[in-house]
Each structure stands twice: as C-alpha cells, then as structure tokens.
Length: 317
Image (tube, rainbow, N blue to C red; front, side):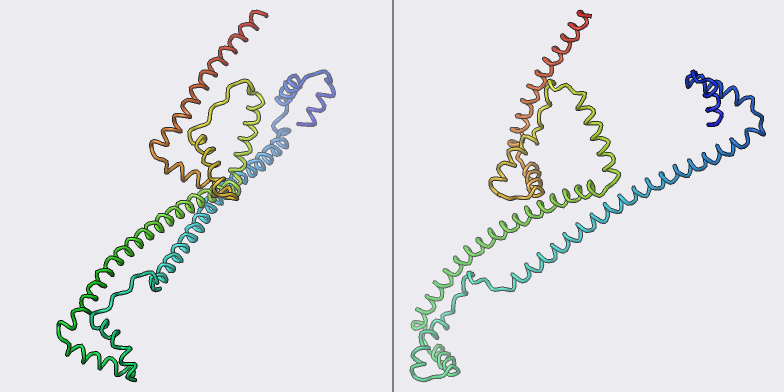
C-alpha cells in the first residue's frame, strides 16, 4: 500500500492527504481478490504481532501489580518481625530487673530476739565466744528472760516494724509512680515507633513502586500544565487546621530537640495532633475557619474583578 500511495502522490504532487486517500480507496476496490491476498497476508501478520505486543504489555502490567503486592507484604512482615524482636527484648530486660535486688527498698526490721542478740554479741565476743556459740548462748538467755526484761526489745521491734510499714508504703507508692511513668514512656515510644513505621512503609511504597512513580510523574506534568495556565493574582486557598498546627508544633519541637530527624519530627507532629484535646483542636479549627472566610471574600472580589474585565473587553470589541 505504501508503494501505491507513493505512485499516486508522484502522479498528483498537488493532491492533499484526504484526496490521496480517496483515490487509493477507489483503486483498492478495483483490485481482484487474488491480487489482494499478499496485502491481506501482511495485514494479518502485522495484526498478530500487534496483539502479541499488547498481550506482553498486559502481562507485564499484571506482573508489576503482583510485585507491588508482594513488596507490601514483605515490608509489613519485616516491620512485624522488628516489633516482635523489640517486644521479646523488652520482656527479657523486665525479667532481669525483677531478679536484681533494689538497694533503695526498706530493710525488713529485726525481731525483739535479734535486737537482744545484737546487744549481747559484743559482750560475748569480748569473752572469746565463737560465732557458733553465740546463738546458743543468746537463745538460752532469751528463754530465761522475764517479760519485763524482754519488753524494751519488743517495744523497739514494734516501733521499727511501724516505721518499716511507713517506709514500705512510701517505697511502693514511688515504685508505682515510676512504673506508671515507665509505662507511659513505653506507650509513647511504641506510638512513635508505629508512626515512624507507617511513614517508612509509605516511603518504601513510593520509592519502590514503579506504577505509582509513573502515576506521580503524570500528575506532576498535569499539575505543571495547570500551574502555567493559572492566574497568579487568584487568591491562594488557606491552610487547613492541621497545617497551621503543624507549623507551630514543628517550630517548638525543633527548638526542644535540635538535630531531630525529619521522619521523627513528622511522626511526633502527627502524634501530637491525634492527642490534641477537643478544646485545643477547636482553637486550630477556628483559625482555619477565619482564614477560609477571608479567602472566600477575596475570591468573591477576584471573581467580580474578572467579570468586570471581561465585560469591559466585550464593550471594547
């Protein structure tokens, strides 16, 4: 057909594309079935090649979709394994701490008998009594003591026991507060790690996913095209309540934690936003609402200005 096209074009150099197509169609109608066979064979061969290309592209698209799903699953499993490992290590550390004695824990008070033994130990040592003899002697002496003789030791033991109870109560309260503080810190850390993990997952999806990259590039080209056609004088849409909060929170966090990484900063901002009280959230919603009202007024004036300009141009024409 290309040869025929060239022949008609050579014979009619002034003819346009549409005219040549009409002449070529008329000539094709005059060709016999036998003469058409070679061309039809070429057509079927090219059609088959085209279908194979389409099938290959379709298969590649399906393969990319499966790869995307597999990458998501693999990333999720890696994050899960990291979390389980962290949890196991935390539990091991907790068990180790339980076995270790706390030097700040109040010592259990001695009984009346042991208080008496301590009093007698120095005197018996001066008499050259060895450590095996001392308990036997003090035990026998304690048995033979009257209630009146035992009373000072029993009163001292009672007083020490009461003091021990007070100290233990204060100790337990302090331990409970420390445990509550530790649990809160651990919970905050887990929330932060979860937020960072989610952001890491999103980042991996964006960087490793070819399909999403292609879509992003297309959207970027479309956005650039829209930006070129947009009016620079048109009022800009105001920031949302989260964006307004985010700017303030970022500034505060960067002052409190110099050198903080971007991923940790983003995670902390998101976490703080989620944990805002209703009253605080209402404040930022109010700020965003004021900005939106101002934007609507500016947009209304802008649209009026456009209409006036268009009307003036029509009158000029």
